[in-house]
Image 1 (spheres, rainbow, N blue to C red):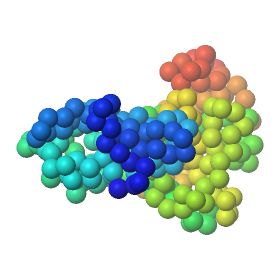
Image 2 (image 1 turned 90 degrees about the vertical axis):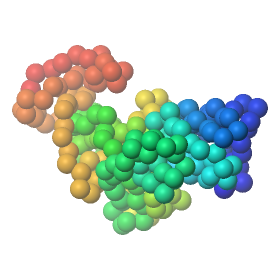
Image 3 (image 1 turned 90 degrees about the horizontal axis):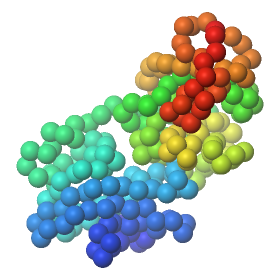
Image 4 (image 1 turned 180 degrees about the vertical axis):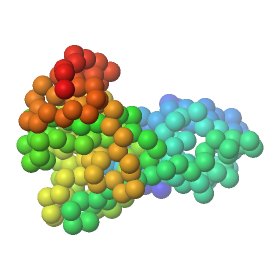
Length: 241
């Protein structure tokens, strides 16, 4: 287990210290059983695979303590779907809830950096904002927004650079080739993994965002938002094709 990982029984949680921040998994314990309740990773640590490190250390700790496991936490359940070797920890009858799920890999231009997104994106569409146009050197960015704990870095974490023009978006790129990989949105706790990079992923767009800044018109019948849908913090105002 990582040296910075500990079982804080006083606060009833497993903790992982990273760069002055604490990621944790809360629990309830009895002498024979443990229930994992909730995982919290500070936004400052998003996109670095910290959740996966915490999940692995937590499950290793449960195994070392010899307790049977029950899971209420969605993050831990999703982690176990990708790491089914931990299924033997579960109380009888609970393993049916952690079947493996689909995952997609994406990489930078040179292949030094690789990330993996699991499950399904919460939102998928096209962004027309001026920042995406400048960042991608293209008029439209095909985005897929995933829960932050559904995305992990599987290769080249030390090669990832970050540029944050505003506090809303942390744009991630490979320091070797400059290839763009993803953008973390810490306030929304979502990560945009660029749809065209995800191998085996079928992009199913449902909307156009920031259409008020469009460089080209797209007449595809999808909703066109002047900025963002209300559920993503925008005005929800619609524009015609």
